[in-house]
Image 1 (cartoon, rainbow, N blue to C red):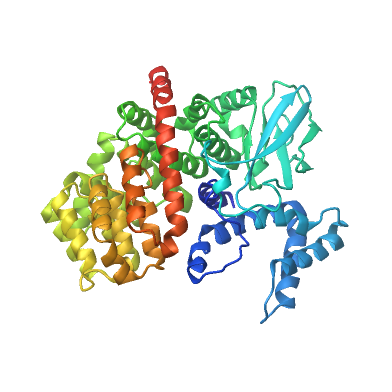
Image 2 (image 1 turned 45 degrees about the horizontal axis):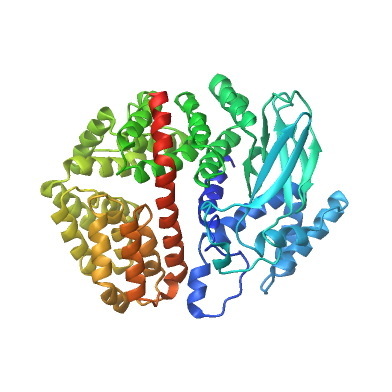
Length: 528
């Protein structure tokens, strides 16, 4: 279950902005149905149920869930019915002590999630909570939903201390007013809160604990459980993005990664590293950042020198992440191998499915002329496998030749060439290419009425197009273009929330660059 944190972190990124929404929400218009069935009900729903399973115990959870399913078989049910079934099982097994409905309503009936602030004084921890928003300047009064709980949560708080036994964790309920708890050990020892990342919240430590954790990671990272290594990376970067933590601390935590061989922490690093790679692309620090990225991935690149070696499930995922980061950093050996593997693939040789996506991406970025592009197009036409067709559609979008990308957009508009349901995937793939993004942005603005006529204003794909295109925009000019476009075409249909989120994200990106590019450059100067 270590991998579940991927789901957790993915939905955090959506739920930490003011244009999010609760799991349980009233729907008043047909287009709202499409809007609200995003990752919030599914991924956040799964995450808070995982948290519930942890604090009531797996036996009570399974018993209550079985009772609920049997009781409402072939019928309708409300969330309150689920809480009642789980409460009955919990009371029978444990004897009660927790009102499940009261706890879970704070997680399902208001959007967002908390950051738990932990301050240690001797053998005491003082805990407080705040609504976590990644944009420190977010206009909370513009939030589309009011909270019945004032953005406070009933939090199952867990922690583990440096010298405690492997499975020995402390557990306590943290109410809306915070909490003080006594803890064991020396006050210079590190500790972990939200042990094994079971809770749906972030954790902010005092600076001394961050430093102690960094030292432990560098000296012996395996002393900290794998999911918590992942959580430290995820929380620190997002706290830094929210101006609640120095970027120096977040980056210091990554220094140990050249020793890390586990997929789960690397996947947390991957998401944050890739975001930095894209947001810094047009900033002066980009060159040094790529050098650092190449340095930290060098050991694993050597480990996975054979790209077609058969690996375990998670090692295969890790190899793919490392190839993306190493090639994305400009590692010449990685790029040369991607180019070589591309030629093998285009000539019908074997390339492992686990590495085909990065091979097509980075191979085409270097060698994506007309001959190779047309070969790939022919392979797309002839392929009968949906997964392979998707990889090929993505690979063709990575050419650096603008005219080929323009032709590709024309192909995407032609239903005899590319299925209508694949149109938005193609546009997303091209927009992810720095060379192709301006083409897609200009095309979308110039042809909006045509797209609305073809797909309908309530198309989920059309609603998600603008957020996809603009995800990494970080200039006032791009923000102005977006605002002018939304003014010209105010009706957004299923894309209403997507537009709000896109504007919020770009404003956050602009502020981030102003605040952090010099800090990151100085850190790189010290650590390269």
